[in-house]
Length: 339
Image (cartoon, rainbow, N blue to C red; front, side):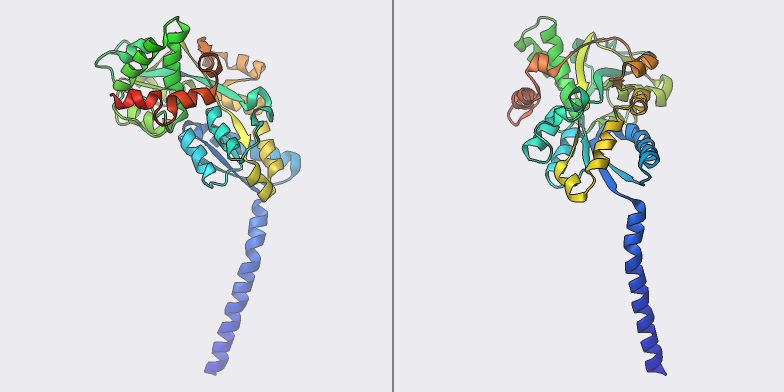
């Protein structure tokens, strides 16, 4: 009797394991293909709205269920994670240089900027200031961030795209107004001397300013400061400098990953959705400047006119800017080490 019971238990266990093993592929199949979007820090809320909209549209047009997962962090840090093996289906970052690095590693196409419209950048933004209610330090322009006694919160340009854009915006503001390189270096040096802490990413910098109550001004993307303003109401004010940099948000399919997993069609459709009228409207609701003129006019109240210059215009492109300013031993290292 004992032997019979023991044998019965073993057979039941074997049957349970067999059924369990058979059920796993069915559950996986029911979930549909999966995409991983590796994105920059302050795009979390954007893709929380984009993803369900795309999933619904994809289901409607193809009948296929799809799962989209997100990873967020400093743009350059995220790009390095993909280069080191994080299996992104797509990357949606905030500077071309990060995707260029992945192209150099053979992970995305060399001509990735031609794979989607507008140099593969469905949205763009710029760098503006968030100050405390009443703007007690009277911060109006880049030079005000360099004044003694002003504390400025900026994420680390070595790891965060908006840290780089802030650096370049301040430098370029001098050059575009007729100043020389020495004057630009002096201004940027004074601004970074006023930075009490270098957070790794833009969202961490926002937390430092809004929740830890550190600093007199936060410099970050226009869409980020407006979202903070919307959330916290009258505690903060948005200040637009007289001139700033055009900050693109480039996207790319990670070729090696999508081909190995068989999801190129879905990944490409996902990025194309960002250019659709629906995808553009979602971006505009998050205060990103969009490419669709109809949508841009519809959300015109979200944007204040500002003079913008490009990285190509002032710095000769991202590769040149990276090499001179942000590579180890570059201008930023020299400026910050002398702090």
